[in-house]
Image (cartoon, rainbow, N blue to C red; front, side):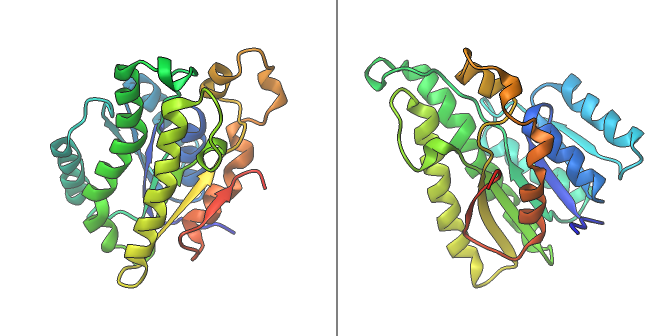
Length: 237
């Protein structure tokens, strides 16, 4: 139903949680997946699982989104150009929670860190990769949203603000690219999922009460293959 044969897809935060599940799912459906993340050991684990399953050989690109500059993303794009010549899919999954605290008490350095990883990194990476995606006959960019991206909630601070901004960036980019490219841009809200971030946000709750990442992958596959543009989907609808 969701064939990704011969597609080149970059997944950020691919070493763990939803990124790991998405990378494996895309590979299972025929894609060559580029695993981007900070922890090489985790990326190698996903790489090995994809290889052992007999799926198309993945690639690893380690990068620290907190410290990466525009030049680093240009180097990444140049590497992808040399190795693959195009990019068919980009899943912006990597993010950090920051701290759950009132805005008046929010640590400014933590604020900068959350914004750098959750907002600036997706902007810089997308900007660097757009020319590669324009070479694709059917390209898809997926931004990761959140329940707190549409309605602000007390104490969610920088994380919530970054996700509001992600929704805005998705809408702007979708509108800009719709008329003159074959690139589709959408967002997805995973909802409550059994990840380390969810456990950190809700330490008193049982992680077994929410689904594992593997259970929400159908909407990710849908966005990688459908022709919709500028939409905000919920993975668990």
